[in-house]
Length: 279
Image (cartoon, rainbow, N blue to C red; front, side, top):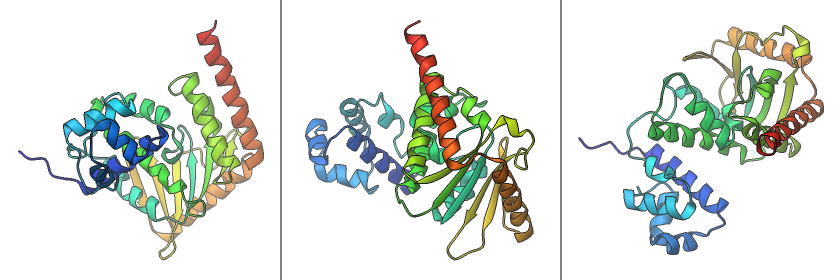
């Protein structure tokens, strides 16, 4: 049975190919020469207009040293790119002009580094094949592209201190992840607030919430739990979520204090990683 072509999957594949090519310091022409793939074909792949075949993907993996990533994540593979309950919220996320999110347990998806995201997707309660994990990984990394535009969306992230202290993937992964958040905060691309353990109970402790505003439609709230998520559009409920967020924000550290704490915890992880390598 033929597998249905997925234009959105092609687009995400192309974005990831371009990102990794640029990270390797290669032009399209240089990558073309090294992979024996025509520059035109590469350009079409990066633009999401053409599908690579297996041989193309294998050559890309070899030259870009991606450990079989592109072969595993061929855009014709069947499967969902995100959890079903998050699919609609993902569309709203891409259209939002303002995003305010509270994360009680994990770094929000748009801020996750590749290593952190890989660990989250690998260590879930439902086992995933390498192919499925890499499909989800590409989608998650692609979500971070909304931060490429400095002006929109405006992003505020409120993190429970537990997010900083939980060593997802180990000390090295956490050090890289926290320093990535610090860089985004120092560059003024995002605003970060940490709710320290010392606060005790706070208004957002009961769950994860993402508030989104738009240019031409009313705001919404997305609330997520285990294997579930719900979009609230009813204005009274959205306002309740906004009020709870504002109350918790009043208990959080300032942006500057939060960045200082995140830097400090990153240094602790760096020290722990050194101890592992040089006991």
